[in-house]
Image (tube, rainbow, N blue to C red; front, side):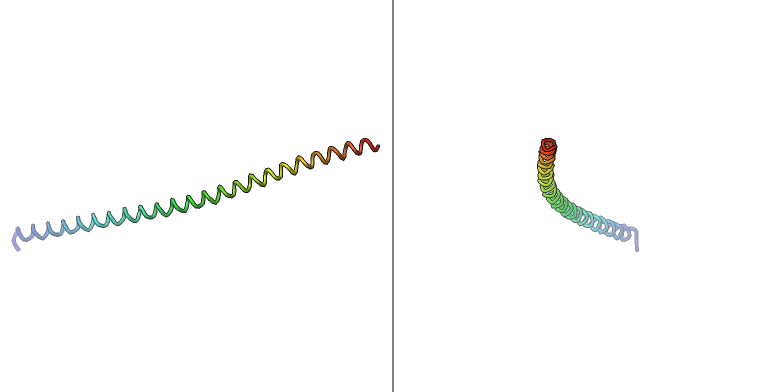
Amino acid sequence: MNLAEIAEKASQNAVGWAVVSFLGGIVWVVRRIFTNQKQIELLQTELGAREEMRQRDRADLQEVKGDVKELRSDIRSLFQNNGENT
């Protein structure tokens, strides 16, 4: 083997490694993009579920507030009736 053959093999090997590295980088980027897209979709689904839960909680809270107001008026009327009867 002379110096020219060694240089040619080395350049072919270096080009091969460069191509393999480049393709590996492309595969990594594509996988990363798809993984992030799946995570984004999962987060959006979770946020939607949380928003529905918040709406239900708000409706329940309004119902409880209404019940508390009704109880207050019932208690007041009981005290007023009790005061009139004594």
